Image (cartoon, rainbow, N blue to C red; front, side):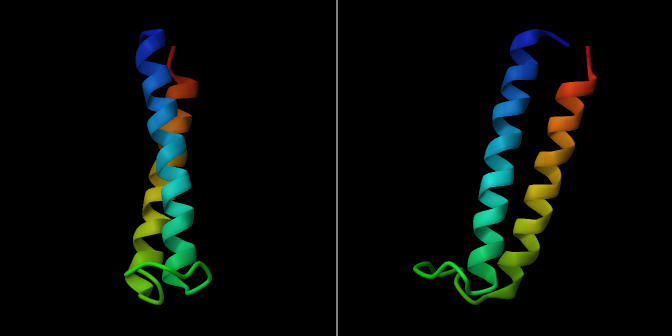
Length: 64
């Protein structure tokens, strides 16, 4: 896998992790100010997004 593809995977992974954490916090009503606040399905989707981001980070790191 080329260096540029690994860089893009890392960027996408970090964004997914960050968005996932934000969605979880909004879903569990910790971070107010959005239509997602207090809706538990966003917490589930955020957890999935963050987990996918972690998997992408591992793939980018382990592939050479």
